[in-house]
Length: 135
Image (cartoon, rainbow, N blue to C red; front, side, top):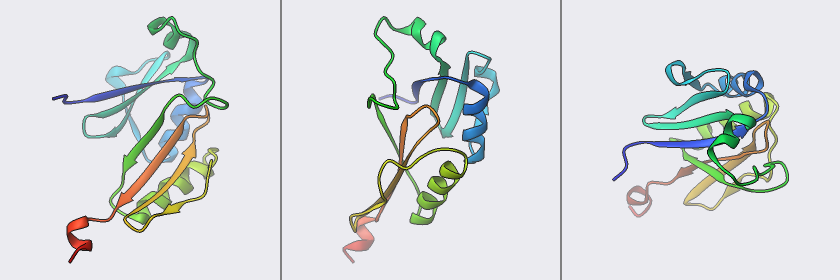
């Protein structure tokens, strides 16, 4: 099985993207960051590589999707509580992100999402512990 994940996302501005994600409380692994790419740490062994579009293009021959008009990926992360879901979403909006849809409460799962400054959709979910819900 795999031990780590590195998701690569194309971005327009390194400074703006780093400021945005720092406003959400995330940090970067500076050992794997430079002016072309930044290693955003989203959890233990969970990383998102924010890559300037020209640098990102060196990894693919495909056209880079404009995430503001085309969905190329939906990133979904679990949270420990509904409050954490709400707090992250509110921080993202305060830092310049937008919400593509209202929060969803399905009873067993609560979620909210935001689009970052480059249009990438990030979703945060809190799942009810089914063993506790069933009594």
